[in-house]
Amino acid sequence: MAREIDTARVLCTLADIPVGATREFRIGAGDWPLRGFLVRTRDALHAYVNRCPHAGHALNLRPHRFLTADGSLIVCTSHGALFEKATGFCVAGPCAGRALTTIPVEVDAGLVLLAADVDPASFENVEAL
Ligand code: FES
Image (cartoon, rainbow, N blue to C red; front, side, top):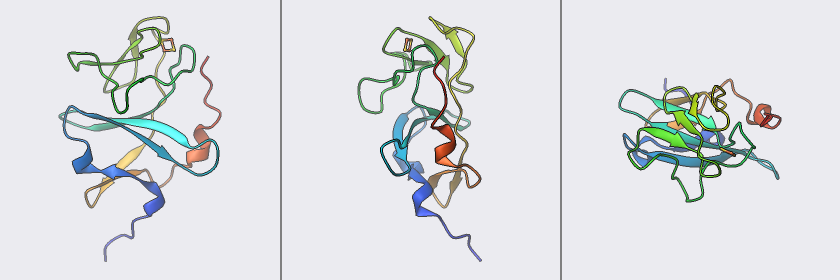
């Protein structure tokens, strides 16, 4: 018997995020939904909280745009911090050595979902500093 999908956990369809793309999502109710973004590489799908560890800003200015011009790294548009796509580790910029907060996700039936054991509210107090 197929597993029932919790529609409240759906971030997008897998088709919405082709290899090499990034995509924003919001999940959760109230004034403080979890704001995150997906990064799809050739091998995997990664998700991070959309909050820079430097000063707590959202990383992007333009919708769904998180990568450097060559697509090799995640960039924070505020002060230029650069992060590895596969780990969220900051390799250059004012927060070098720190990392984005990972959000566990899974793919089921062509849908990208917040992992079943993750409470979106658990990311509310992720500190920027
Ligand atoms: S807020 Fe991201 S580099 Fe400063």
